[in-house]
Amino acid sequence: MPLVAVLLLIAALLLVACGSGGDAGRSPACPPGVGRGLWDLPWSEDTPADEAAGRLLENPDFGATPQAARDLEAGVVDERLVAVLRTVTEEHRVCVEAFKEGHSFLPGVPDGPRIPEGYGEAGGLPNTHYFGRAADVYWVDGKSVAGNATDPDVLDVGRVLAQIPARRRPDQIIGPPPWTRALGYGRERGWVLARDQLELHEDHLHLGYMDEGGTRNAR
Ligand SMILES: [Zn+2]
Image (tube, rainbow, N blue to C red; front, top):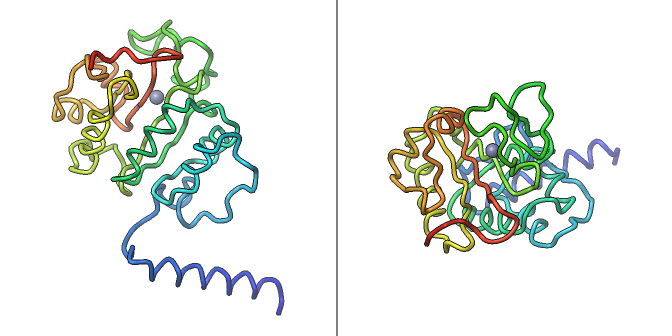
């Protein structure tokens, strides 16, 4: 059998296998073409540097762009963040657009250890993305965060985050203004409420840890 035919047969079998798993109607965690969704096989064959990160990558409810997947494989993503994403994917499908690689606050300005001046009032503060301590989630359960800030599933991701013990929960949670308002969590729970920051997060959820160890959550 020619190779092409073999590949087509394998693809057909995969489709059948996925379709019969009781998950009919589920869409991949990332939109088609964005990255590592259910259909974007084969995945990289590199051995993940970190086992927890590897397990996250294997989770069909987790999606990542190629740049985000490379960060996980390289082991540059903070283990607290990996654990939080695994917790969130127990209830929702999420797609991470960027951890460190490919993240930029301002178009054409490469990321460094500090947030560039010009990015609202946060300019000059430590850049948690640069240290692998932040994730940007642009899609939840197949829906873009943009335009769906108060969708029940997108809101529920916030509630799942709020239930994570304070010492493990991100202390830099930023989302669209209506998402933040509807949830009503405050700074002590890890939510950033600065208006200019919310306006810079109309289209994604930012989950970050301000410090290398511990969190600044009060409870
Ligand atoms: Zn971010």
